[in-house]
Length: 304
Image 1 (cartoon, rainbow, N blue to C red):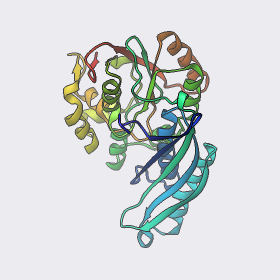
Image 2 (image 1 turned 90 degrees about the vertical axis):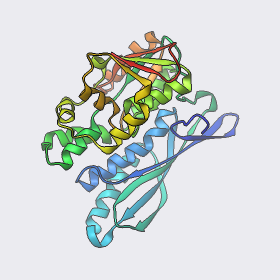
Image 3 (image 1 turned 30 degrees about the horizontal axis):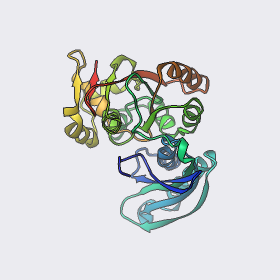
Image 4 (image 1 turned 90 degrees about the horizontal axis):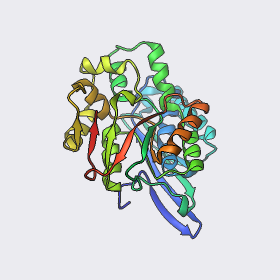
């Protein structure tokens, strides 16, 4: 907990530690089943980011039964259950309350060998940085609420958010990496700043290399930005230096609060090329090398 890692870790013995995390949120898509899948994938991600294997989960549910009814409840829980089963995790219980607003998520427990734990504190100057999913989910979900997205885009973004980071995690563990974090509510630049600060390094990111949904730039230009984006910008902006050619709307995309985003992985350049090839072979097509780790001031980022 001391360095604000993605999840809490507790050593049980010399060769076993548990990873514990919890996450839940309000609906970001209209389909109850898809919402359940996304919420479950998001909660499981913190364990994957730390190189662990999730083993058990507990449901967390706040639900307005009178307003939404049993069919919506069943859809949310079925979506979560299917994603939990896909991850090879056992659902062992949970808790629900009657609430005015729907919220769903998981408390997840995983395991890891203490010597194989991956944190956000180990990045080294000279490392390459890989991002495994495209950016833009927060802005696009805002556009969805405004009725400005088509069904094809909703399906593409939902599929990305519902995709487990399991395979990315397995591949990075096999090849060996220095640091990792998943990209969620603090956005790419927020999580990158945290990783850089914990690792006592700087980061240099290349805008053209950062994967994002093609439609997100247009929505950002129209001002369809969630509140979390502005909170991220207010808190982290002073740590980031943008090149003059980076437009304001693309800066917003980099601060956009993500839901169930990808892993940001730091590792040696030769391994990065090999890992990127393996990720693409595994069907993780959006994965890209987006920059590198520098010996700059701790917690600072340059975007060019």
